[in-house]
Image 1 (cartoon, rainbow, N blue to C red):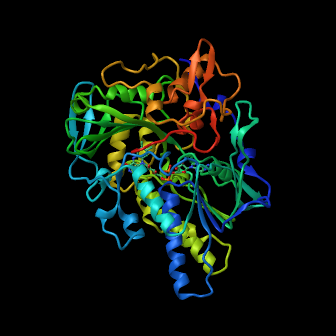
Image 2 (image 1 turned 135 degrees about the vertical axis):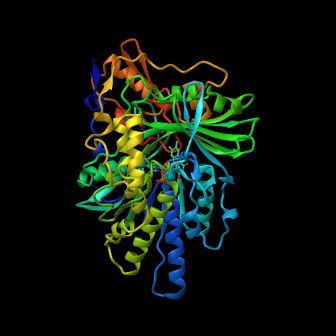
Image 3 (image 1 turned 180 degrees about the horizontal axis):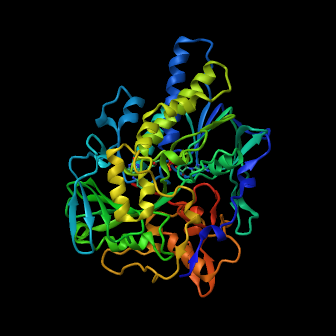
Length: 548
Ligand SMILES: Cc1cc2nc3c(=O)[nH]c(=O)nc-3n(C[C@H](O)[C@H](O)[C@H](O)COP(=O)(O)OP(=O)(O)OC[C@H]3O[C@@H](n4cnc5c(N)ncnc54)[C@H](O)[C@@H]3O)c2cc1C
């Protein structure tokens, strides 16, 4: 049987673009602390730091309050954020001890939940695994949480700079000195147009990378400093839709089984946002074996299942989006989470609990711990950020993820055998029987070429990839330079593989050629994991998610 190995066609990470050995220029915006990425990690970190500094300044006249900033590539906060989402409110309560949980931007508490195993026409309820219990958690839109956090950050004096992607870390020797943003207003050939805006340098004593999943600067930094884990980070792709529905959903649902093949790891989530709105998504590990597996198309199939269909009937799709999730867990943590002038927090550090499908509260907690570390360094006039490692090691982030450390990898041996192993691991807190193969990345996983290509199921609920990108609110100019770096000698089979990997129709096999529709890209980073590399593009490009 013929296979392809995606790594053979993947170009090298363009590290020289992400790491620039220059000092910030003389026009640089001077900040003390910079968070790169305004998701839950960056915003929680910036707010915590601002609160700690305000408090200190009240009692310590010698304490100089730092200038704190947060850079975000989206035009508006939350536009590039996408999650399920069922949220553990713990870190939000810590961040705002004076607020009640009813003041938080949640849609509703989780009152009922169920896990089902699906076949094409039927479903069986399974006992909810302990890792998936959601008592005390809330259904929410991450975009809404992020916009609310943005208001709190602004009120606390944080400088929020939206529409500015960080393109490079500025470094001298081992020290990170700040970032350089991506220029705007370039034409298709990369030449300045009448709307040209040059890059901006931002200097910072401390930079916190909170770029989210598959962060480009983080990848380059970890590689440069030799901090990548020996168990490479692995990823899943989640494709999600929000529907207005006539028939209310009364519980949080997770499913396993159909429409996934048994050699792929993943499942669906189906959450009630309000009585007439649901969030439906399918998450599939990017180590699947068939070259023609297509997560977007599988989600379209899933909508025809009787369990889902009865809710969608008479309803209407409102939004569509996609994003990857780091799934390697505890074993894929970077060897060190800090460097000179730099910290890593949230998804970019891999803080996701896969069996629980939770990352938001880990992202927020790591942002808070980064803030505490920086606050202590500022107070003690120290440059050392070593404390962060200890705080993370002693936090619930590490203990939770250690407990489930082998579960995701167990599923490398297939759904049924993996499920059996996962049950044993639950009983032994992750100790027995150990994980599956942790030695290679998703791109190194061979793909079978024998499968019939997956096509988007036609039907009343079906959304095409082009329609999905439209419903993501895609705001990319048609004539910006290509931001995707494609490898050499892409065979027709590899072109077809990319076509199926990408949920947004960026890659198409036309005859024997690969066609790249770069403006369709919604920054999910799936092909950055398996093929062409993603690089930052003009600020404000990409999706404009409303309620994801
Ligand atoms: C389909 C799906 C379902 C999920 N369901 C749940 C759930 O139910 N519950 C849960 O707790 N977790 C869930 N998660 C995981 C959760 O969403 C993440 O763990 C969490 O959002 C991570 O927060 P973060 O701040 O690290 O990153 P993000 O939320 O990804 O935020 C990173 C921000 O950085 C910005 N950025 C990136 N690069 C740059 C750059 N170079 N310059 C400037 N800005 C940049 C991005 O635009 C983004 O706004 C889910 C994830 C997915 C994809």
